[in-house]
Amino acid sequence: MPEIELRHLAALIAVADEGSFGRAAIRLGYTQSTVSQQIAALERSVGGPVFDRPGGPKAVRITPLGTVVLGHGRELLARSASLTDAVERFHAGDGRIDIGTFQSLSNVVLPAVVRRLRAEFPDSDIRLSEEEPENPQIGGLDLLFYDGPVEGDVERVKLFDDPYRLVAAAGAFPAGPISLPQLDGQPMVAWPLTCDQPGMEQALARGGARPRVVFRSAVNDTLLSMVRAGLGAAVLPWLAISAASVPADDRLTVHELRPAVPPREIHLHWPARRSHSPLARRAIEISIEVAAEVA
Image (tube, rainbow, N blue to C red; front, side, top):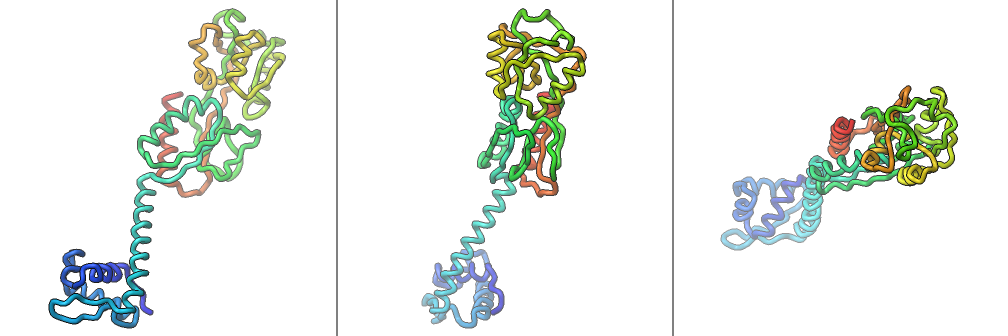
């Protein structure tokens, strides 16, 4: 059977609904002869007449074969319209995006990214997951923020450097920068030994600081609560300090370190060689814009 074209089915539906070729032509914006040609082409494709044509002012009557074709034709045109709508919505930014993030970035950078995405693509489905594994994998994520480069088949862009600072209880250290040897033997609260933490502590040791870690927690607010309580100081990246509004807290002080500890690097990753949806592509662009503002 020759291929049936959607325009032929549209003509069939219009004639069946209107009861005449003339009114169908008006509905479709065609000439009557064009409608007749399309119905003739459809009849050749299905191997028989789809309408009985009584002639004169009488309405055309659909044939049994035409009834079969009409039912499937309506379904096919509805699916075609649905497909067209879905494609148009995809290009307009509709759809789902899965983003992996981590604690301090979730508080400072990601809200601005999500807010701008929602403003541009109000029908988007944004899914976020916050984990900080020792060996992160992008897996099924579209985008992954991480404090360092992730291994594997990924592409990435470095967003900014996040410098480390000492956070201490007010009065625990003199104002101004703190030399690393001043921290040697001092009690400290710290993150678990995942992500960039081991590298940071090794840098402290190279600078002559071997503090006594008396408590570890992955929760920034918990660490800062222990600093306020006098349990020990903390060396945290500026992103975490800013997210907790530490500079505005008169119970805490923030100090630069001398020599400076190498900053942690904040990267945005995505699967290599994957075609981006318009939503994911725009999310990358917005993330870079927001990171530049934060930096």
